[in-house]
Amino acid sequence: MKEIVVPDRYNYIACFLTLDCNLKCDYCINNHHGIYKHKNVNRSGKDWVSGLNRLVCRTDLPVTLQGGEPSLHPDFIWIIKNIKKQLNSDILTNLLFDIDRFIKEIDPARLYRDALYPSIRVSYHPHFMKLEKLISKVLKMQKAGFSIGVYGILHPNLESEMAEAKDKCFKSGIDFREKEFLGKFDGKLYGKYFYPDAVSGNIKKNYICRNSELIIGPDTNVFKCHHDLYGGFSAIGNLSDPGFEIKDIFRACANYGDCNPCDIKIKTNRFQVYGHTSVEIKDIRVNS
Ligand code: SF4
Ligand code: SF4
Image (cartoon, rainbow, N blue to C red; front, side):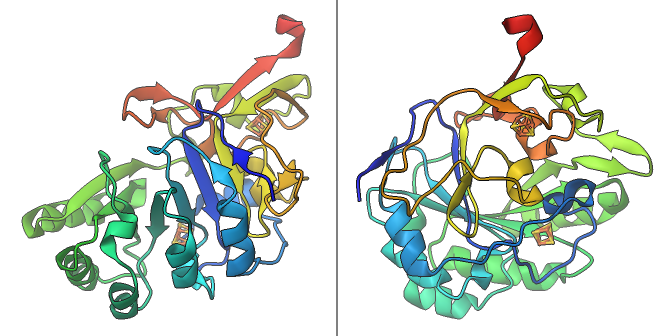
């Protein structure tokens, strides 16, 4: 199958190996507005690898294996081992998997690159995890040579738990970073958004939008944004389609106002410069 060229301006390649998860965090962004309707089945490791290995991109742009919880994919380890060497890989995980098998089978160099953040980014969810156990697993992975750090979500209900995790990780020599809580809690909207209107719930139909992220769902379908992936909207292509190519264009969208916070939050770009957002949105009445 022909190569798939990822535009140089792209900042992220999100590979949702599965949207299944072994936890049920009530703040999970996958279920924004309770619109989670994605029903597509997970593709095999072979399908994932043959699709991902078609990608041609900048060397500083990794493929990020995430979910849901990516380790629930039955071929998780096989996928990591078989992604072509020209692609760097990152993992977002809750680390609730067999790390001994992982350490035995994966060469840390496979997941290492010169970046300002760890390659394995572990999310800490206090309602479901014991902090001491998490720290000991992370230290074991670190000792085995993996680039790994812990991320805590700044949910208003979890402030003391995150402060404790930050302190204990710091004292243990673990890179701990805080992530902004996105979405509504107690009637208040949290998060900083490039297009505040886009999360208002007030849907408008005259917008066009283009992404700087490649969003690949569990069925290797490619979506124009997280909203479409989680909400079960139509895909714009599939990695296993021999003719698939990434068209870096603005597309019409009838769902502006119901955007997923992930797509429009203000964040850092790949150079860790703050002020970036994934999507660019235009009102066609103003721009036509
Ligand atoms: S671990 Fe992550 S993906 Fe799973 S329910 Fe919690 S927030 Fe969602
Ligand atoms: S406007 Fe919002 S819902 Fe529409 S494509 Fe862009 S990010 Fe997705």
